[in-house]
Length: 340
Image (cartoon, rainbow, N blue to C red):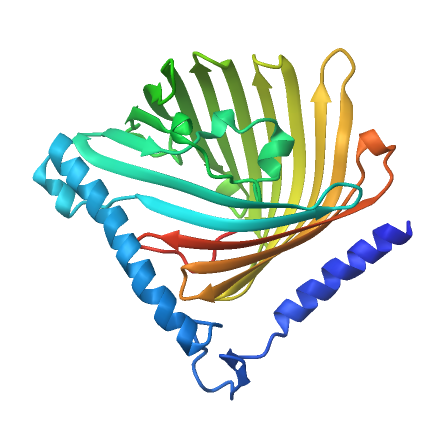
Protein backbone atom coordinates (compact mmCIF):
# COMPACT_ATOMS: atom_id res chain seq x y z
CA UNK A 1 0.00 0.00 0.00
CA UNK A 2 2.90 2.33 0.76
CA UNK A 3 4.25 1.88 -2.77
CA UNK A 4 0.83 2.62 -4.22
CA UNK A 5 0.63 5.87 -2.30
CA UNK A 6 4.19 6.77 -3.31
CA UNK A 7 3.35 6.08 -6.98
CA UNK A 8 0.28 8.26 -6.86
CA UNK A 9 2.26 11.00 -5.13
CA UNK A 10 5.02 10.81 -7.75
CA UNK A 11 2.49 10.96 -10.60
CA UNK A 12 0.75 13.94 -9.03
CA UNK A 13 4.03 15.73 -8.36
CA UNK A 14 5.22 15.21 -11.94
CA UNK A 15 1.96 16.56 -13.33
CA UNK A 16 1.98 19.53 -10.98
CA UNK A 17 5.58 20.37 -11.80
CA UNK A 18 4.90 20.08 -15.55
CA UNK A 19 1.90 22.35 -15.24
CA UNK A 20 3.87 25.06 -13.46
CA UNK A 21 7.11 25.00 -15.44
CA UNK A 22 8.17 28.64 -15.95
CA UNK A 23 8.95 30.07 -19.35
CA UNK A 24 12.65 29.78 -20.10
CA UNK A 25 15.04 30.65 -22.87
CA UNK A 26 18.08 28.38 -22.79
CA UNK A 27 17.88 28.13 -19.03
CA UNK A 28 17.09 31.77 -18.28
CA UNK A 29 13.75 32.91 -16.89
CA UNK A 30 11.95 35.59 -18.83
CA UNK A 31 8.76 37.57 -18.63
CA UNK A 32 5.55 35.76 -19.62
CA UNK A 33 4.77 38.55 -22.11
CA UNK A 34 7.78 37.47 -24.21
CA UNK A 35 6.97 34.64 -26.68
CA UNK A 36 8.21 31.28 -25.39
CA UNK A 37 11.27 29.82 -27.12
CA UNK A 38 10.80 26.75 -29.29
CA UNK A 39 13.93 25.16 -27.84
CA UNK A 40 15.48 24.16 -24.51
CA UNK A 41 18.88 23.66 -26.12
CA UNK A 42 21.81 26.06 -25.84
CA UNK A 43 22.72 27.99 -28.97
CA UNK A 44 25.79 25.88 -29.73
CA UNK A 45 23.68 22.68 -29.73
CA UNK A 46 21.08 24.25 -32.04
CA UNK A 47 23.83 25.12 -34.51
CA UNK A 48 24.92 21.48 -34.53
CA UNK A 49 21.48 19.85 -34.69
CA UNK A 50 19.52 22.05 -37.13
CA UNK A 51 21.77 21.66 -40.22
CA UNK A 52 22.05 17.91 -39.64
CA UNK A 53 18.28 17.54 -39.22
CA UNK A 54 17.51 19.59 -42.34
CA UNK A 55 19.98 17.56 -44.38
CA UNK A 56 18.65 14.15 -43.29
CA UNK A 57 14.99 15.23 -43.60
CA UNK A 58 15.65 16.51 -47.11
CA UNK A 59 17.32 13.21 -48.01
CA UNK A 60 14.36 11.19 -46.67
CA UNK A 61 11.82 13.24 -48.63
CA UNK A 62 13.91 13.47 -51.81
CA UNK A 63 14.56 9.72 -51.81
CA UNK A 64 10.88 8.86 -51.40
CA UNK A 65 9.74 11.33 -54.06
CA UNK A 66 12.32 10.10 -56.58
CA UNK A 67 11.29 6.49 -56.03
CA UNK A 68 7.64 7.50 -56.26
CA UNK A 69 8.32 9.36 -59.50
CA UNK A 70 10.09 6.31 -60.96
CA UNK A 71 7.22 3.93 -60.15
CA UNK A 72 4.36 6.42 -60.43
CA UNK A 73 3.82 9.85 -61.99
CA UNK A 74 5.34 13.32 -61.97
CA UNK A 75 2.79 14.30 -59.31
CA UNK A 76 5.21 12.70 -56.88
CA UNK A 77 7.07 16.03 -56.67
CA UNK A 78 4.09 17.87 -55.15
CA UNK A 79 1.70 15.35 -53.60
CA UNK A 80 1.53 14.93 -49.81
CA UNK A 81 4.10 12.38 -48.64
CA UNK A 82 4.10 10.54 -45.31
CA UNK A 83 7.73 9.37 -45.33
CA UNK A 84 9.70 9.70 -42.12
CA UNK A 85 12.73 8.50 -40.16
CA UNK A 86 12.72 8.26 -36.36
CA UNK A 87 15.80 7.70 -34.21
CA UNK A 88 15.54 7.15 -30.44
CA UNK A 89 17.66 6.34 -27.42
CA UNK A 90 15.82 4.67 -24.56
CA UNK A 91 16.64 3.64 -21.01
CA UNK A 92 14.58 1.34 -18.79
CA UNK A 93 14.91 0.49 -15.12
CA UNK A 94 12.55 -1.99 -13.52
CA UNK A 95 12.80 -3.11 -9.92
CA UNK A 96 14.28 -6.61 -9.77
CA UNK A 97 15.44 -6.59 -13.42
CA UNK A 98 18.66 -5.58 -15.11
CA UNK A 99 19.01 -2.01 -16.40
CA UNK A 100 18.41 -1.79 -20.16
CA UNK A 101 19.14 0.71 -22.86
CA UNK A 102 18.29 0.57 -26.55
CA UNK A 103 18.95 2.59 -29.64
CA UNK A 104 15.88 2.51 -31.87
CA UNK A 105 15.15 3.33 -35.48
CA UNK A 106 11.95 3.26 -37.49
CA UNK A 107 11.33 4.52 -40.98
CA UNK A 108 8.74 4.59 -43.73
CA UNK A 109 9.07 5.47 -47.40
CA UNK A 110 5.66 6.41 -48.75
CA UNK A 111 5.17 6.26 -52.53
CA UNK A 112 1.61 7.57 -53.03
CA UNK A 113 1.36 8.05 -56.83
CA UNK A 114 2.19 4.52 -57.91
CA UNK A 115 -1.46 4.22 -58.89
CA UNK A 116 -4.66 5.93 -57.80
CA UNK A 117 -5.48 4.75 -54.23
CA UNK A 118 -2.58 2.26 -54.44
CA UNK A 119 0.58 2.92 -52.45
CA UNK A 120 3.96 1.26 -52.49
CA UNK A 121 5.28 1.15 -48.91
CA UNK A 122 8.82 0.44 -47.72
CA UNK A 123 9.11 0.41 -43.93
CA UNK A 124 10.67 -1.22 -40.90
CA UNK A 125 9.17 -3.99 -38.75
CA UNK A 126 5.33 -4.09 -39.07
CA UNK A 127 3.09 -3.89 -36.01
CA UNK A 128 1.89 -7.49 -36.36
CA UNK A 129 5.38 -8.87 -35.64
CA UNK A 130 6.12 -6.86 -32.48
CA UNK A 131 5.21 -9.59 -30.02
CA UNK A 132 2.66 -9.72 -27.23
CA UNK A 133 0.44 -6.85 -26.13
CA UNK A 134 2.81 -6.40 -23.18
CA UNK A 135 5.76 -6.11 -25.60
CA UNK A 136 3.87 -3.57 -27.70
CA UNK A 137 2.93 -1.64 -24.57
CA UNK A 138 6.64 -1.39 -23.74
CA UNK A 139 7.55 0.23 -27.05
CA UNK A 140 8.57 3.41 -25.22
CA UNK A 141 12.13 2.07 -25.15
CA UNK A 142 12.03 -1.14 -27.19
CA UNK A 143 12.20 0.25 -30.75
CA UNK A 144 15.47 -1.50 -31.43
CA UNK A 145 17.35 -1.08 -34.69
CA UNK A 146 16.56 -4.07 -36.88
CA UNK A 147 18.50 -5.59 -39.70
CA UNK A 148 17.59 -5.81 -43.37
CA UNK A 149 15.57 -8.96 -42.62
CA UNK A 150 12.93 -6.81 -40.85
CA UNK A 151 12.27 -4.52 -43.84
CA UNK A 152 8.88 -4.80 -45.52
CA UNK A 153 8.04 -3.87 -49.10
CA UNK A 154 4.42 -4.02 -50.14
CA UNK A 155 1.44 -2.50 -51.88
CA UNK A 156 -1.48 -1.03 -49.91
CA UNK A 157 -4.87 -0.57 -51.54
CA UNK A 158 -6.51 2.30 -49.66
CA UNK A 159 -10.21 2.45 -48.97
CA UNK A 160 -12.30 5.21 -50.55
CA UNK A 161 -14.80 5.55 -47.73
CA UNK A 162 -14.80 8.01 -44.86
CA UNK A 163 -14.54 5.91 -41.68
CA UNK A 164 -16.85 8.36 -39.88
CA UNK A 165 -19.63 7.40 -42.32
CA UNK A 166 -19.01 3.71 -43.04
CA UNK A 167 -16.41 0.98 -42.67
CA UNK A 168 -13.13 1.79 -44.41
CA UNK A 169 -11.10 -1.19 -45.64
CA UNK A 170 -7.43 -1.38 -46.65
CA UNK A 171 -5.86 -4.42 -48.29
CA UNK A 172 -2.11 -4.94 -48.45
CA UNK A 173 0.41 -7.56 -49.55
CA UNK A 174 4.15 -7.75 -49.97
CA UNK A 175 7.31 -9.40 -48.68
CA UNK A 176 9.75 -9.07 -45.79
CA UNK A 177 13.38 -9.00 -46.95
CA UNK A 178 14.88 -12.12 -45.44
CA UNK A 179 16.15 -15.46 -46.68
CA UNK A 180 14.01 -17.18 -47.65
CA UNK A 181 11.67 -14.24 -48.50
CA UNK A 182 8.71 -13.93 -46.13
CA UNK A 183 5.53 -12.97 -48.05
CA UNK A 184 2.59 -11.47 -46.18
CA UNK A 185 -0.97 -10.27 -46.69
CA UNK A 186 -3.31 -8.31 -44.45
CA UNK A 187 -6.71 -6.65 -44.28
CA UNK A 188 -7.44 -3.61 -42.09
CA UNK A 189 -10.92 -2.26 -41.34
CA UNK A 190 -11.62 0.97 -39.46
CA UNK A 191 -14.73 2.75 -38.26
CA UNK A 192 -15.44 5.90 -36.24
CA UNK A 193 -18.77 6.64 -34.57
CA UNK A 194 -19.86 9.86 -32.88
CA UNK A 195 -22.30 8.75 -30.18
CA UNK A 196 -25.50 10.77 -30.00
CA UNK A 197 -23.80 13.66 -31.83
CA UNK A 198 -20.98 13.88 -29.26
CA UNK A 199 -19.00 14.40 -27.17
CA UNK A 200 -18.20 10.66 -26.98
CA UNK A 201 -16.51 9.01 -29.96
CA UNK A 202 -15.90 5.29 -30.50
CA UNK A 203 -13.17 4.15 -32.88
CA UNK A 204 -12.57 0.59 -34.05
CA UNK A 205 -9.39 -0.69 -35.73
CA UNK A 206 -9.28 -4.35 -36.80
CA UNK A 207 -6.64 -6.25 -38.73
CA UNK A 208 -6.17 -9.80 -39.97
CA UNK A 209 -2.66 -10.67 -41.12
CA UNK A 210 -0.75 -13.62 -42.53
CA UNK A 211 3.04 -13.95 -42.61
CA UNK A 212 4.52 -17.06 -44.15
CA UNK A 213 6.99 -17.43 -41.27
CA UNK A 214 4.76 -16.45 -38.33
CA UNK A 215 1.36 -17.63 -39.54
CA UNK A 216 -1.95 -15.84 -38.94
CA UNK A 217 -2.68 -13.11 -36.43
CA UNK A 218 -5.77 -11.09 -35.61
CA UNK A 219 -6.15 -7.93 -33.54
CA UNK A 220 -9.03 -5.65 -32.65
CA UNK A 221 -8.83 -2.30 -30.87
CA UNK A 222 -11.78 -0.30 -29.52
CA UNK A 223 -11.14 3.25 -28.33
CA UNK A 224 -13.90 5.19 -26.55
CA UNK A 225 -13.07 8.77 -25.67
CA UNK A 226 -14.28 12.29 -25.14
CA UNK A 227 -12.74 15.69 -24.40
CA UNK A 228 -13.07 16.77 -20.77
CA UNK A 229 -12.17 20.35 -21.62
CA UNK A 230 -10.03 22.10 -24.24
CA UNK A 231 -6.80 20.63 -22.79
CA UNK A 232 -7.83 17.22 -21.41
CA UNK A 233 -9.09 14.06 -23.10
CA UNK A 234 -10.39 10.87 -21.46
CA UNK A 235 -10.04 7.46 -23.18
CA UNK A 236 -11.05 3.85 -22.50
CA UNK A 237 -9.11 1.43 -24.73
CA UNK A 238 -9.66 -2.31 -25.24
CA UNK A 239 -7.21 -4.49 -27.19
CA UNK A 240 -7.63 -8.17 -28.04
CA UNK A 241 -5.00 -10.11 -29.98
CA UNK A 242 -4.45 -13.67 -31.18
CA UNK A 243 -1.32 -15.00 -32.87
CA UNK A 244 -1.03 -18.46 -34.40
CA UNK A 245 2.64 -18.62 -33.46
CA UNK A 246 1.84 -18.87 -29.74
CA UNK A 247 -1.88 -19.76 -30.03
CA UNK A 248 -2.75 -17.50 -27.12
CA UNK A 249 -5.53 -14.94 -26.79
CA UNK A 250 -4.34 -11.73 -25.11
CA UNK A 251 -6.28 -8.71 -23.95
CA UNK A 252 -5.64 -5.35 -22.33
CA UNK A 253 -7.83 -2.66 -20.77
CA UNK A 254 -6.56 0.89 -20.40
CA UNK A 255 -7.96 4.09 -18.91
CA UNK A 256 -6.10 7.25 -19.97
CA UNK A 257 -6.37 10.90 -19.12
CA UNK A 258 -4.34 12.98 -21.59
CA UNK A 259 -3.58 16.57 -20.71
CA UNK A 260 -1.98 19.11 -23.03
CA UNK A 261 -0.12 21.52 -20.77
CA UNK A 262 0.93 23.93 -23.50
CA UNK A 263 2.16 23.79 -27.09
CA UNK A 264 5.37 22.05 -26.01
CA UNK A 265 4.29 19.79 -23.16
CA UNK A 266 1.77 17.01 -22.57
CA UNK A 267 1.19 14.45 -19.84
CA UNK A 268 -0.72 11.17 -19.72
CA UNK A 269 -2.05 9.33 -16.66
CA UNK A 270 -2.78 5.64 -17.31
CA UNK A 271 -4.16 2.61 -15.49
CA UNK A 272 -3.54 -0.61 -17.45
CA UNK A 273 -4.51 -4.26 -17.08
CA UNK A 274 -2.87 -6.98 -19.22
CA UNK A 275 -4.25 -10.51 -19.39
CA UNK A 276 -4.28 -13.83 -21.20
CA UNK A 277 -7.28 -15.95 -21.95
CA UNK A 278 -6.85 -19.66 -22.52
CA UNK A 279 -8.36 -22.54 -20.64
CA UNK A 280 -8.06 -20.39 -17.51
CA UNK A 281 -8.06 -16.60 -18.14
CA UNK A 282 -5.64 -14.67 -15.94
CA UNK A 283 -4.48 -11.10 -15.30
CA UNK A 284 -0.71 -11.08 -15.92
CA UNK A 285 0.00 -7.49 -14.90
CA UNK A 286 -1.67 -4.27 -13.80
CA UNK A 287 0.11 -0.97 -13.47
CA UNK A 288 -0.18 2.79 -13.01
CA UNK A 289 1.90 5.04 -15.22
CA UNK A 290 2.48 8.74 -15.80
CA UNK A 291 4.10 9.73 -19.09
CA UNK A 292 5.43 13.25 -19.51
CA UNK A 293 6.44 14.37 -23.01
CA UNK A 294 8.29 17.57 -23.84
CA UNK A 295 9.21 19.07 -27.17
CA UNK A 296 12.86 19.92 -26.48
CA UNK A 297 13.64 21.52 -29.82
CA UNK A 298 11.32 22.90 -32.51
CA UNK A 299 9.13 19.84 -32.93
CA UNK A 300 11.99 17.53 -33.93
CA UNK A 301 13.55 16.46 -30.60
CA UNK A 302 11.38 15.02 -27.80
CA UNK A 303 11.92 13.77 -24.26
CA UNK A 304 9.67 11.15 -22.61
CA UNK A 305 9.73 10.39 -18.86
CA UNK A 306 7.44 7.58 -17.71
CA UNK A 307 7.47 6.33 -14.08
CA UNK A 308 5.20 3.35 -13.37
CA UNK A 309 4.20 0.99 -10.57
CA UNK A 310 3.54 -2.63 -11.66
CA UNK A 311 1.73 -5.46 -9.89
CA UNK A 312 2.89 -8.52 -11.89
CA UNK A 313 1.36 -11.95 -11.41
CA UNK A 314 4.75 -13.67 -11.67
CA UNK A 315 5.84 -11.85 -8.49
CA UNK A 316 2.62 -12.51 -6.57
CA UNK A 317 1.35 -8.94 -7.20
CA UNK A 318 4.23 -7.49 -5.20
CA UNK A 319 4.49 -3.82 -6.28
CA UNK A 320 7.50 -3.07 -8.48
CA UNK A 321 8.69 0.32 -9.66
CA UNK A 322 9.72 1.01 -13.25
CA UNK A 323 11.07 4.07 -15.02
CA UNK A 324 11.36 4.64 -18.76
CA UNK A 325 13.26 7.49 -20.39
CA UNK A 326 13.55 8.22 -24.10
CA UNK A 327 15.07 10.84 -26.36
CA UNK A 328 13.61 10.81 -29.87
CA UNK A 329 14.34 12.75 -33.04
CA UNK A 330 12.04 12.92 -36.08
CA UNK A 331 13.29 13.48 -39.60
CA UNK A 332 10.51 14.70 -41.87
CA UNK A 333 9.42 17.98 -43.44
CA UNK A 334 5.98 18.23 -41.82
CA UNK A 335 6.01 17.72 -38.05
CA UNK A 336 3.58 17.76 -35.14
CA UNK A 337 4.57 19.74 -32.08
CA UNK A 338 3.27 17.38 -29.41
CA UNK A 339 2.74 13.66 -29.90
CA UNK A 340 1.46 11.21 -27.28
